[in-house]
Each structure stands twice: as C-alpha cells, then as structure tokens.
Image 1 (cartoon, rainbow, N blue to C red):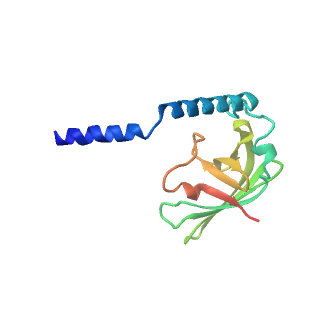
Image 2 (spheres, helix red, strand yellow; image 1 turned 30 degrees about the vertical axis):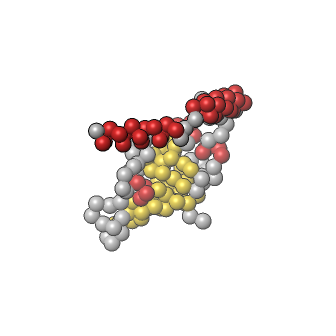
Image 3 (cartoon, rainbow, N blue to C red; image 1 turned 120 degrees about the vertical axis):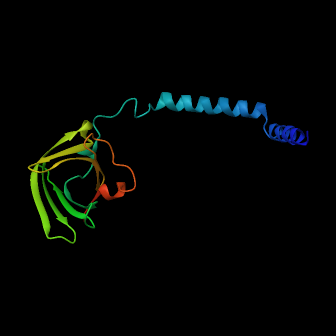
Length: 158
C-alpha cells in the first residue's frame, strides 16, 4: 500500500510539471517551422545535386598514407598516389619484416563520384573519397566498422 502511494505521488508530480497547452503550442510552432523549411529548402537526400561530388568538388589528387592492420606484424605502411589521369601507384611495406609490394593501375569513379575503385595487378580496393582523406571500404562497398576501422583511413600528405 505504501508503494502504491509513492507511485501515485510520483505520477502526479511529473504530470504537474508539464503544461498541455504549452506543449501543444510548441509542437504546432515547431511543425509549422519545419514545414516552412521543407518548402523553401528540400532535403538533400530527396534531391541530391549531381553537379557536386567528390570527383569534381574535392582536391583528391595526391599522396595518401595509412598503416593498415596486419595479422602477424605491427602493420602495413601503405602509400597511395592518385593521379589526375585516373591512375594510381601503391607501395606497401610490412613493418618489422623485409617485405614490400608495389602495384599500379587505373581506377574508376563509382557511386556518383564519391568512391574510387582501384584495379591493379594485385590491387582491388574501393575507397570513399573525402577532403584530404580516403576511407577504405570492404569488398561489398560498405564502410569498415569496428575496433580497427580507424586503421583503414588514408590521410593526404602535405
């Protein structure tokens, strides 16, 4: 019985803190404001601007570097050069080993100019292009998540 009294008291106290008239007015004002914004400026996801993408709006050419995860070494230091003519060169060095790899090839723009797909002799990599940064994607083209995700980010060298 005592617990029931405290529950009823708590419900009464919380309901007294809110004013139904004010919350209804605020909700109506907020809805009207959002509707005005939607009419004057459509959401980008509804009408993406095909004229602006990473391919034509970002300075993507240059040299990028990342240290990729490695199962049996401290990492794979990778230097990637993207050229204006849509070719690339990649140099990978396994840290604390005497193993290095070089590859080069062409890349194609995908996903409306936001992703590059590198295709070389030994390279088949997709990267999402950002300003001064590349995010390596998995083979299905999804962003890599989890504890090691930050290691799949290439940063542009100045």
